[in-house]
Image (spheres, rainbow, N blue to C red):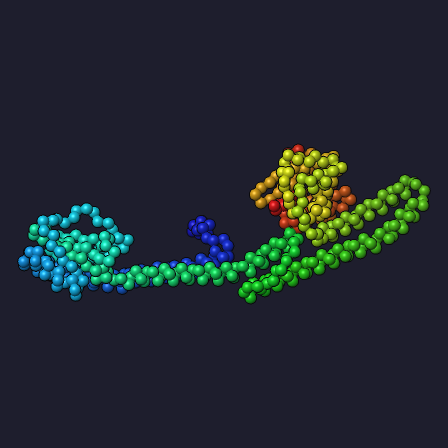
Length: 440
């Protein structure tokens, strides 16, 4: 049962618009089908049967009267009698036989069955009829001695004409209700789509533009909650940056005094070690500040990606695979932030493998940047840990040049800021491959 339900759900609409439309249209369609079914079986079929019985009875009486005096003049007299009041014409076709060709069936074949039943009950002679040749008349032929009688009856005398009118208005009402539903549901789904686009834009670090909560009260509430959440996140980021910037500023003053004091000391081994510790402390402060600014706002720019990567790799031990980069490829990024991410990854590769290789792969929706090296790499079970801020693996592979364990964390934050991802995998060169995936 569960497997059947899962298979059924695959065919259901995935969007809110499609599901809401299905919720409204499906009951309307079921109701219209049920109404049409009961109408045809209860009302229309009964009325049509009564009409068919009446016409069949008139034809039977006319046939009996003709048999009493089977002449052309008698047929003409019957025609003059029946045509004005009963809308039934009579013609005697002397020497002719009933058609033997297969008659075409109407779409509503039940009407033919009703007429056939009525004629079978009223006539003892062979007959043939056609309901499709004429749009407004029915052709009935009854075999008699010396030929056959041809009766032409008005269609509304045989079949209830209101049925087609009913079907027309049923379909028209369904179409109108569907159009109204589509317009209404689209207006309800648009604010949700706008909220989703605003959330996606904010996730990529873009401005929200003129987004304003609208739609139903629940959607407006979600929109206002999103704007409040964005304000809280921005305030938190600003406070974090200000706090770390303040700490960095406050610590630089005593560090500067210590550097001056050490510079006045003799250049002994202890003094050199103290100077190295101070340099390391400064690098740590810079690393903390870089991490705090990892989500700092920067306006996106559309750049020529090949030229951009050439500038990033210039002067570094980096092999740029230009053949994998289309010359006309342009992508929207934050140049300074994205360069910081690439620098961190390239620095790690150079530090632990003495070089890096950059290549590209394109899909229909994303650009994938590969940074490969031939170093020791990172075991699979430690790759998730490597992305944690201030994480220092035993191999020291995830540390940035300052040695505070923030290189990969900053690079991942920047990739996510661009709406992309950063993952680690095995490199074809035998070391580590860092893959930055960005939307095109």
